[in-house]
Length: 326
Image 1 (cartoon, rainbow, N blue to C red):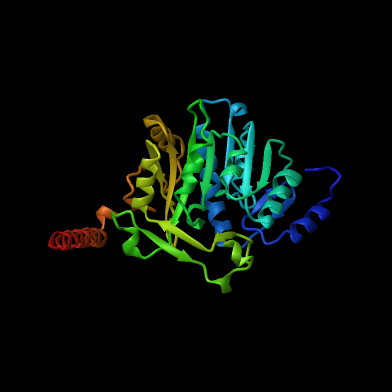
Image 2: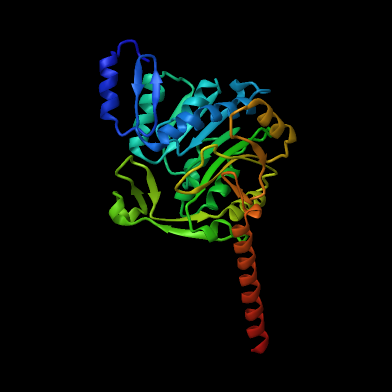
């Protein structure tokens, strides 16, 4: 924090930059938010994310690592990455409001010198390539905002370093009909944002939430867990570790994943041994669970999955029969 800036001046800046999504503090300065996201982050997200990241870099020199926070919002996770002493942390968001808040929080208030904050779209391949390569990529709460959720995995392939050290931390939600969530088929749910709920240039396809400046694509696809799993395997992710929220969500299902290109059995053991957070367990993910809910252990889910498979088999048989008839 700059010594020439008074507490009163900082508090005025905080007020002007509202709305804030999360709670933050630095000395006597407090940034307060009454959103559900803020309470969830304080109770669960902040400590858990710090523990995961600390574990990932425990046997590495942080001064040799670069990290990327995609869809950084105001920098609530970027803050944690910077505090670990990494060589460089790059924070990206397409929203001007989020970028302004992140600049204030991370640079003006906390004074980090290892952070670069950039406004841009994760779907812009040339922009993403210009950022360089990263050992850790944080990709939380963004996949379901995208019209083409598969393109981002193509882009990420160009950001992986050659030294073999790479972790992708992915968190995504499944806010879709229950039968699509539990389906074993690679189905997706098309989401179209009503124009009356958002602001912005509708012709660009990007829409801005007036509540906090978050950006959505006008039309987006939410992959179900089975589809996410198949996509990750297709792109060569061998180590798929999941962890569940100990409090759950009342508006959607979630997957929280720690992903590697190389199998690391010791990583799963270390995460469980070193992170003793009540209600949190790390386990190998096979695409059949979300938020402590295991599809193949719930009779309703098993019945639905069987019905969906049967429906596809009947459809395939009828289609084949029509083809032979012709």
